[in-house]
Image 1 (cartoon, rainbow, N blue to C red):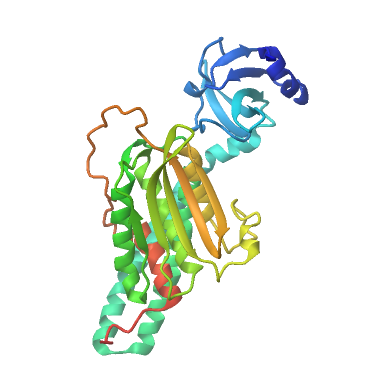
Image 2: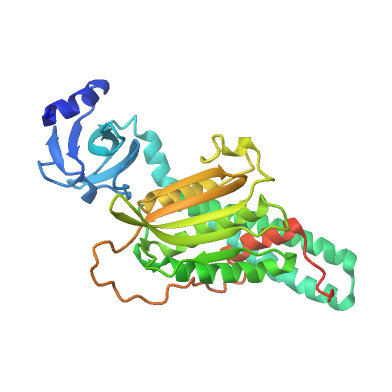
Length: 370
């Protein structure tokens, strides 16, 4: 049986790099094997990076790390075996000029927050006045003017949804996830109940199937809600009105590890093949998918999981796969109720706004019908 030394393992990959930037050779646990600077042998790189790095990392990732009271930007390359498993890594420290894009990305949330707050404050005023007008026009049965108020509410919904998604996407670029044990089943059950209550106005609903297993994950529950609501809204907007998208949540095993998988399935008839080409990154020239898919993809990434979107037998399937929180049979942590929490800020919250867009798209049913 042929054996490969550590130097032989890294040599082909090191030769492909420019040689201008310092390199750190890492094992499959991201522990330092050999470094030109900063890290000592055996030291774990992930203790210093500013973003969550999936384990194992399957593709090149750029991030920042904090070491010796300084920030550095780096690029991590996976080294794979013959069957595609990541068995080691090379970390390249990037020069300031090369890291400009990472630095700009890191500043995005703080630059976006004042705009987000300003928009939300003014939207709250519009919502309150529109609600007052709607109530008065309903009492006077002035339906012509009422339709104008409904159009205003629709425009405000769109602005609120776009602004909220822009902020959430920018915020996910920070390593500010508040990871905690979350019961994914309870979270999804509560979320879909709220969605269906709002969707009743247009006659649509989402079916939820939750397997009776341990569905505990480590995640930021608020960001999980943002990602799942975007996935549910996409399934509703891009499927026929007489169909019911299905959210399935279940636990599965893969190579000795356990995962919790979220699968959102809907009819395919309102999609085209173009929706699946280069559609998972933010692209303002391609408005159909907008921020929704990038947010879902980013949430899966920062939570150490995977995202996929496929056409399976005429149905679109969006899958978020996250590591299960407890894999070793140890006692689980006693958790508070994992149901979605929200507060009244004088305007519809994120879930309500996203479902309101669906209701406006398909049209409200006549509540006077028997």
